[in-house]
Image (cartoon, rainbow, N blue to C red; front, side):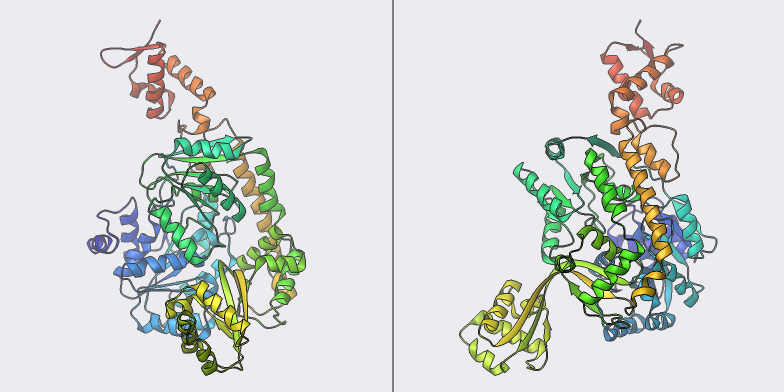
Length: 628
């Protein structure tokens, strides 16, 4: 069967050989066995379930926590001519019904959906009728209460096992401590699973941490000496823009990326960076998931992520081609306090969450007992201004509501245009007779939405622009013109969030049911941030070693190339160990490595320095001696 898998790997994905562990994982899945797969970012996790999903008869169901991940993977499969569909927020009951029917009768290979969808009766009824060949759980750490992104809805995935008890489950993630691994296996009820785990060590990534009083200068200095493709991570949209301008002023090609950009602008900027027209992408953590660019030479952090897991995943976007890359962390003393404010102090209490939930429901005019499965655009800034809310706290509260499956929160800037015709379609067409662009747009609106004077119509300006062969700016200008002529009534609202209520509004009981878990998660966030701060501020231990120990992996050797290892004190200590080893007898580099238990590349580098300084000599049989 693995020969067929290799054939798919070559014809569908364009690779001749599997990456480490992929072949063993795929073979195990094809044999019908449950599996827990821990591969680093860029290690090829998705292929481990996509190839069996293509190879086996039937449909593979993939559970994924983020709309962006679902869309990216579905788009990638479609480009490879694989039939795949994703169920994301904002879909009507009828559309959902059609999609699920297609999965039963339409010969689809993949169905991607969020764990929240498994709570819907219709979804469960239709999945029962599907010929399911495999259940894949992406970002499986989300199922664990000890994970850094715990989502209670992931506990509902066990529903799939009840519907299809004989179908194997493959759970994949990039980051999971031993406790998280055990929790995943227990929560998914995996039967005698084989755990496939590659080392968390990334020997080609050199971790550098720099404390500085001038981050702006340090960033520019770094890119002066590091010309390769890079990502710089920041924690706010404002910083993404500001640091991009700084780099551009320093003649470094850079663009910015955050969740508030239009889809068109995000796509254009991403493509420019992917094709190396831009050297640096300055981005919030909205950027990177699903991005597979092998030649990223550096990842820079200008502010603290929320956990070691997040830091590990983000730095793992460098060096996927196996070549030497740098993870450069630039921070100052204010960053740690800011991180505590952002990730710990801003976390909502039960009472604050109830407050925000009521304000949100009132703002969107959702009555008690109603609103389930309804989607609403939201301008976050206007929402905060209306109720004089602290933006950081309010956004943390919305994220908590999303995490606990009260709402589904999607980012993405767009204009929502609502119109009502005040005149007949004929009257409006007459007005546009001598205006070709206006006429094309009006015709597209009438063909798509009709010309009723009795209903308010929600217009998709991007769709109208496509159907009229114009631009969205043209569409909005036309709507403005028609409103000025009193031919239509128009409301154009700028929005940066989309809120879908997953359950009907019920102010008290909605929040009370997970209040205890909320407080526990807040405590866990504090512990995870403390672990990251310890990693950043500890200047004595090998950074690579500290990261591996966090993930319960121990290695005896220091890496020799992180900023802690190469600082003066460590260099002197290594050289002293080498000289001590040579006191008793001449040794070659392998013998020295065995004696002092340091990576051979580090030993060779220090031997070169000692030779240059005249402290050691090398004999004719390549043994080193102390120069007396």
